[in-house]
Image (cartoon, rainbow, N blue to C red; front, side, top):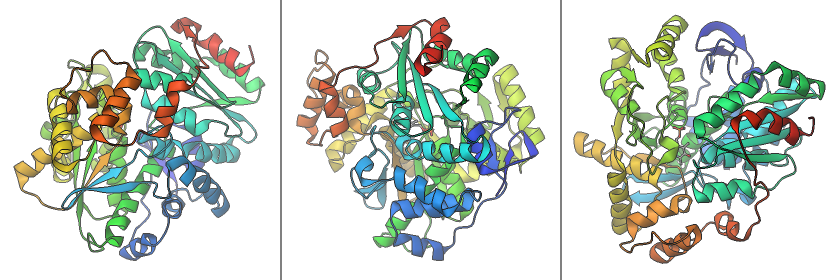
Length: 499
Ligand SMILES: *Cc1c(COP(=O)(O)O)cnc(C)c1O
């Protein structure tokens, strides 16, 4: 299986190259030139297997340049009971009849990014061995919260890698900051930036393209790579849990093998929902993709009108991981919907760069609307939904997941569609304790500190506090530096010990 670029269909690279490189040189994203097939017989077989075995099956179809031993090494290190709390790596909970919550947050950092970022370090080191043998991979991350911590946990103590994370000092929640500053591991570095997320991200981009720094790394046998969500190595692990959850429904007798289901995904960068779309392309019977947005509803508008327009007010919401105006992975969907026409994609994304907007042709819009339903809700509706779901079903969901539940209810009310449905549940509610507590408790908890809020939420809901978050309370911070954006290059060389 080879990979093309969304902006150059003639380019052909191996999976290892696509993963080691991250993004194509002309700015396009790597896409598989075809999709491996998944038959009902495969589903029947996979239903009797473990999550790691299901993952191996899916990866084998896409990463044809990886050996069986390499795939075994990757999945058996990533998806362990030790890291995910049990062998049930992607747990499926019953919300109400025919509606299931796919809990993707049982990993070490309590958010769905673990599903991909626990595997990526292994995919990346195997890929690097095949392409740039012998070099240490240096991962640089700018984060607004969830990604940085998940990447740190994924790369921590993985041989042949080092990871450095920059976050905006005032731009992450208390819990997220604590998660990062207390990070363990001998190959990790964490540093705060005076400024916002854009400053951190621009600083990282500038380092990636700084040839003096690149040379310096090269002379020490190191090379930069990126762990962000446009890397194919982050997308392919996400296809697994849609197939796995379908297997679980078949196994439990909730559906017959071959029945169609709907999928609802709280969406930001469009990676998670795109993985479900690829699963359908392989043969998984999915009828409708329901794309849920918060007040930053650029995708809702796009699905309704065919016009993508990022020229709009940016809202900071209580579901911060979906506060995005450019959903990078949408480019991969458009490439498929445009019939793999790289020229069309180049035109659309040149328009996006120049005007901040583009319109897709009618035929593409129609295909989009056949498969996707888009909806959104604001913070007040998100909180009402958390409370209603808790009161009615005794189920506590986080702010991102609540957006998905609300949009799904709107979809059902509008269409009457009663197809069985999986809702992607993307974070443990304790990761966003302040907002979730505010939604379910009538008391004024504004004066409490982060861990008092966690305690109060535990009292109110009865839901267990994940150990990884509870333990943070007594952990010493290891990384207390806060620097200016201009000091980032020096900080990187310092942390790598090659100044
Ligand atoms: C990253 C994230 C999302 C958005 O996922 P995308 O793949 O970027 O669409 C939703 N919820 C949570 C909790 C996240 O961390």
